[in-house]
Image (cartoon, rainbow, N blue to C red):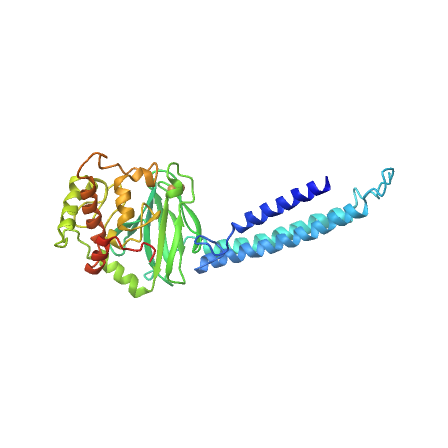
Length: 363
Ligand code: CUA
């Protein structure tokens, strides 16, 4: 029997090790791999509380184990009862005071961190302000200081305070970029604020962190932090965007026509072509690294698959299937729309690559 027990124990240990192996400290959405002062401060509080709790666990555990060893029955007929301490004033005071002290040790740094990272701030001239609206299941990012709207990819400059005004168009959502700042809810009609700054340029993954039905798990987004000059040229590209100026490429021109004919313009705003609609704004779509609210790299192949059958890639989303399977024009039209969409904001060199399907989504 003992070998069976040992085998069971070994199996449990193996399972536990495998489970722990699933926890990476440097994953793309790891709170342990911080990239900004807010996340750093929150991680500091977490680690402090963790080690303090571990100390309490070790202390209480040591008492428990020593009591179990010291007072165990030495033989089956060992009926000794240890000395009873019920009502001992000294002990009662001690085990009331110590926990109160421990709670204070945690409460004081917690409250200080909350005040340092969570209080509402008044925007100043230098801050970047972005109005964020959550919709089932994608994100509006509006830049009021620069006068344009984009979706699903939030560009910010490094080392500058970013202030997000959070609102929802339908149900509750939550904005969360684990490496940069903690979560904040987007509540219809409630003006929530979240602020942070990013210290290293890079691509950060974000995720809606509030169950919002349907495609909640696919309500992702990307935060792209770049040096100030790169950010400014991204801003200029948006301020100058006008999709009426399509290139001479015949496929791109056909795609531009299809954008209206197939009804894209009814939902997706596009600078110079269509007003803001109920779907993600597609201005400069060719500059996006991802599609479907951050779920796929923005390649010609993925975009074609998305247009062919959006429900297959993101079940439950509100994008209709625009072509009947039997439609003889389907592939040619998808091809043209892909060429048009990827040409938006992309320069000629990138466009040539786009038509070859050679774009890398995760740059
Ligand atoms: Cu939006 Cu979950």
